[in-house]
Length: 456
Image (tube, rainbow, N blue to C red; front, side, top):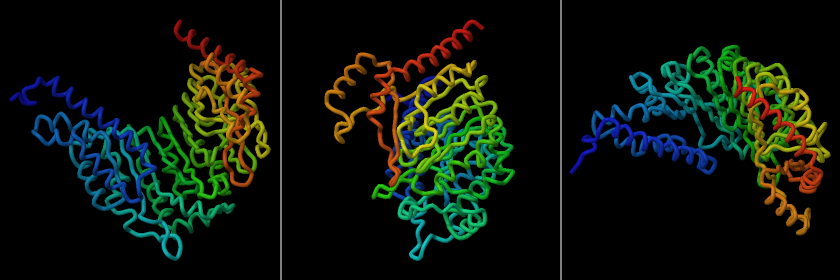
């Protein structure tokens, strides 16, 4: 019977690459399902990565072990327990450390709530082996990407919506008394020690809880941010089952407003920024239940790509984009909205104003400007916001003009903070055509820039 070992070196490598591709796709599916996982399963997920076929193939013989090593050790997952930390450290101490490109730290407690309140800190929450690995990521000399997901007990936050905004002394006190706050502080302090890592240029912060962290104010962490090429931040959302959304917490809005101080103003070398909120806490505007994003106009001087999700468009965002007219090449607004008809929002603007003011700034570097989805939702018949006749007409017109945008207009509920689709506003703006006309002018600028670059 023919053996895998009888294959040519090129075919052996092709087999390994195909297995790696399939496992990468499976890994992406696992991340998409992460929200559905039970607490405490992070270690099991980390183990399951090593149960994939490529691991079995690498165990067959020395030839395949050598061929598989760059794929097996390409991505590592660290969880906060002593055994896992020691395992990752053994990789760091071996020749396989050179193969590591992606590193993910994730942690969940079995419960963040003790019978008498919030769980107190314990040495088991941040073992010495975990700390050693995170403080010495330079042991992986070719590491490129770091992702951090820290615990946030949704039950705790959502049971008690409140307007309390912590003072500095309260932040420090919370980190001394609460397990998850202590872990958050320690993790960021540890990764900040890698501020001079030559290849680590990409950081992703997953489902960030809207609470201040004392480590963010340390000079070492700010140096770490200054060394990055790209930063991706997603904010934890959620609602308590009774409709009270994340944005009903006063500290959430205060956190979003202070993100410039925490992150943005220190990103001196970043070329790519992604900021994703949620439907339970869309950001971008001032007002009740709103949370303004204050991008300093002159921050991130090298920014070339901006991606926003669940953001309201604003004049402040226009100023930021226009302040980077000579360098910003790509803008992607994904599930973003105008709050023009939201009585809670301050200084909301229509899409036509947003696009026109960017055109007026003559963005010379802009090569792509996406607003997705192209067609915002319009089916408001269930709630009586739209007649069958209007819906049928809109469906017909959109089908006949698939490239024509139906831009999103939305508003927030004053009590619960829920995001509602402004169907009437969407149809009215579509019929008027001014949003599309302004967007077309912006696209003309993009096309002109592309043609100029092709000539050069």
